[in-house]
Image (spheres, rainbow, N blue to C red):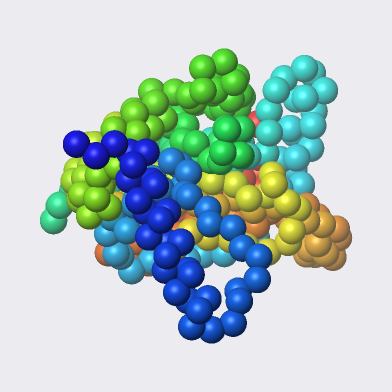
Amino acid sequence: MVSPSSLDQRTTAVFAKHCAAERRAGDSPGKYQVVEPSLDRQLAMDAFVAIPTGHPMVALLELDVTRALAAIAERRGRGERLSLFAFAVHAIAATIAEHPDLNLVRHGRRLVRFEDVDVSVPVEVQTPEGRVPREAVLRRAQQRSAQDLYAELEQARARHQATGELGDEDRWVHALMRAVRWLPRLVRVGLARWIIGSAFRIKARAGTTLITSVGKFASIPGFSFTFSTGPRAAVFVVGSVSEKPWVCGGQVVPRSILGLSVMVDHDLVDGAPAARFAERLQSRIESAEGL
């Protein structure tokens, strides 16, 4: 049986031999560094290959969060712990519950419409390989307040500092990846496709929708969105808040505007239900409903 370390040495030797041949054939490439993908990066690459193709629709929403930010500031002044992202997660989950087609998940040739909105949230944590995103799943988010969701995310971060794992889902995924990492990539991707092929496995391990944030890392106006919804009906990317001139009450005034990207798989959801969902989500967030 070949050990993982010997496989590493053999792969590195073959790569070095190939690079030496390339240098003899042409100009020197200059200084460079060969980087071995971390466990988290390898997991991401295999999952991206395994994700089924769809036909995504993308909506780039600009939402006036002036009222929501004022309500959050007021609650923080009373000692409550809360963030705009947690409020956005609460609003999206509650709106999905009102428009359940946005909570569909592929199950082979069929679709499963779940009642509970389980939200997958990538949480960036410090690891020996650097800062990487790990997955936390907020169960039954449609029934929970923004404060409760914020507290669970903070608990997940604290748990990672203490144990190295965010929760059960994160622990399961990385245990599986460590077990199969040294298998051929074709086998790993096949295993990922088997997992993704069941809506019930997806819900149990990765939730029914995904909400990520780029706004907390950099305050840059504009939008970001993922390349696919995967097996889920919809995914969301919360951007940053910027001050913009806005028509409010018939006058142009400065307002705090949040960029929010919504990607919906047209194979699972038609345009009209998606538009009604977006309209209700806008109303909920801009009125600070739930705060």
